Image 1 (cartoon, rainbow, N blue to C red):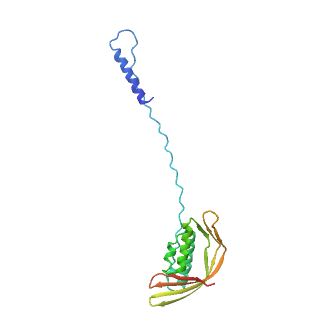
Image 2 (cartoon, helix red, strand yellow):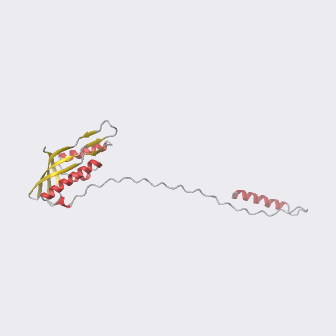
Length: 202
């Protein structure tokens, strides 16, 4: 019974008692109203909040190893190996920021590669495979004034690659291939190496 109903019933009982004050007779007296217990409404259980689905996090770009910072033949080879690890990362994620940092201003092939990756991902596509693995690295270094130069030649084995665009019509597939590349590095003073140029020799 609700609180409103209780108040109405109580009011009617009081009016009846007042009207009968001073009346004679043997009628049984009307008992006082019994206090009603107000029921406490039962609240519905709160709907549990669904646990959000975790959003996959994009992997971080490969960190440059300390060996790749040395202005030596070994350092130049370590840097070129790191450069291609960052290329692999850029192709797999579309993130070209780290690759841009490793490329010197005016590196034409560097800029072309970065632009190509950006076009694919801007169109809603993705690049699957195509990772590079370097072997048989050979390096030479020289210093002119305050600037270091290095030339690194190596064999680049590139895995099969699929450039996957929305739908199937524009997908591009490339078979595994192997090239011999030559990269020119430059480092001013104590700065890190950057790729000034690279070319496919054979």
